[in-house]
Length: 385
Ligand code: KG4
Ligand code: ZN
Image 1 (cartoon, rainbow, N blue to C red):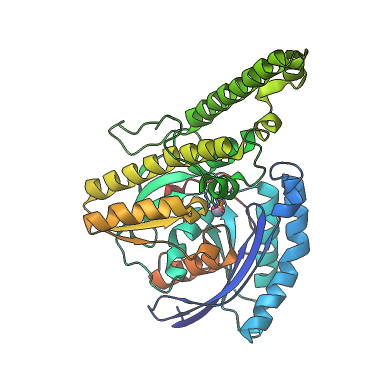
Image 2 (image 1 turned 60 degrees about the vertical axis):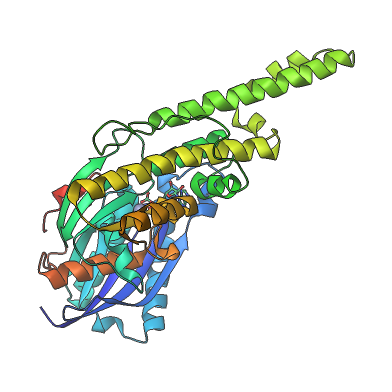
């Protein structure tokens, strides 16, 4: 392995196209030279979620201009690249194929090897992009839109799962709760924003598996509890409106409530006073955050490790960060987060993870340019290609 490696990373597993260039010198933590990102959030917003076919087509449009921009910003020539890395899985098959196809074509054209990366390994190692990178070993709390896992990380490629969600991920719990509150897509940041004005103790919501005695999570029941609470609040509002109307001698208020379809529709929730909506959002966030914090502390106790790394989109949540910081400082545990811009999907984490894999000797890049993608791919099953 050359002691100076230039690695291009391409991420296209879901709704962000990310490209980045990282330089690894010897065994030093690799350095990010340039990165560029295009988020498709606006495009998918109208549909209330990611439309896979639209995502793939947009990745095709964006990936080469973003690559050109990254190379231009770095001031280097594409011929100087040593390795082209890409996200091989997990993710949307069509979206992954775009990044894999471009990376392998680029590798073949340049005569440079390619490396297919695991998306979650990218998230896991993303805190190494920060100015204060962690040291191995550590406990990792990986909280993205599709995954919630606690891991013991002993080094690059040495990941043991300590616990994971048995149903919905934490990000999914944020997104689904936000959707039924009419907060749109992506729901997590929107719910967190409105929660800042609310009382997290206003409504009692379940803390699933909090006392299960293991490190697994379950968030599927939470959205049902949020829905039941939202229905109660809307029924109370409708009853109050009905009483008001009856007092005023008006008729048909009940029909209005029923015609409106109801209380099952997210739209009607939006008409509740902002304080009530903020209180429900804050209570939902508090339920998710409490479980994540308590299980992280339990993982630290179980492993005896004194370092926690938080990664993935939900790692951007301010309440989660504040509560983890407070709890960990009380235990003398150091917590590391990726920079906010690298919490959600990006190319920098893929380039960084690839560079670290190559440095560690865990994996070699390949000059076999035939590629496949792995839409489903458990992190503990990473095999060198
Ligand atoms: O890691 P990520 O960008 O994509 C996946 O690999 O899944 O995570 C996206 C998830 C979404 O569920 C999004 O709602 C959530 O992260 N998220 C947040 C926040 N920012 C992003 N959830 C709560 N609070 C936030 N501030
Ligand atoms: Zn992700």
